[in-house]
Image (cartoon, rainbow, N blue to C red):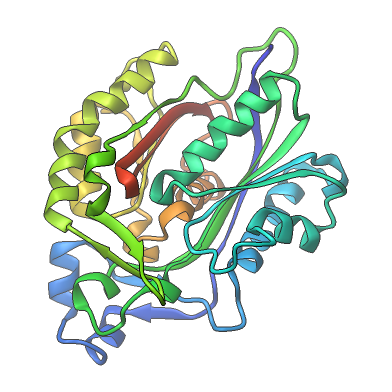
Length: 315
């Protein structure tokens, strides 16, 4: 029961970049309209031959390489996604097959934008309980496949990508690198963010989500810090779900993490749902904006309306 830690992270985005100017050719919008309302300038879009499990496998392979591990070292694969079109095999099994992971427990976690932080907590619990030795935790979504590209209120938001973390037991006698999770939901407001229908389409009630995120979530995020035994000002980094810059900036300010680097990857990547937190976190690590051992708050929120957050130590 020594707890677990993140050994390494990795991320992947498709090569195709869609700019605001490109979108202006599809719907009645403009770069000024998009940036003033959501802060997004570009997003990456996967092609028809790039399924969710391929995005996930690329990110996971990078995390494994960064950890100095192979697929044979993994015995649990968790994929957070809400854009898996097929029901079986699930994304985790498909990723395991792509990577050559031998006989892992393989599960998908569908908590939409809070999926990665839910999956990370699940991996932490599994390692603590001795049910897993090392886990691959992946957030991957292909939002472009569930988007109505004629609806300017949603098509300007989304992007595709994946991020991954390798989770393993913390060394005996050391502090855990993944703090206690604080998670929950507001089921009666679940209709505020939806991916429904045949074919499935993404829709949301933007103002309801904005009010909930900026008024209800700051106190919950601070409680996640308290569970880790830290004050918000002790944080070196804050990685919130990359939904909208107009949500990220006020939410980060209300949390009170005055000394932290705040991830703003939404500007370059758009809203990638379950991929957004590990994608942004991996980029901060890659650029050296946070250092090994730094405390970082990961906080996901969105569909259902669900939330989950924990303080982790930077790998």
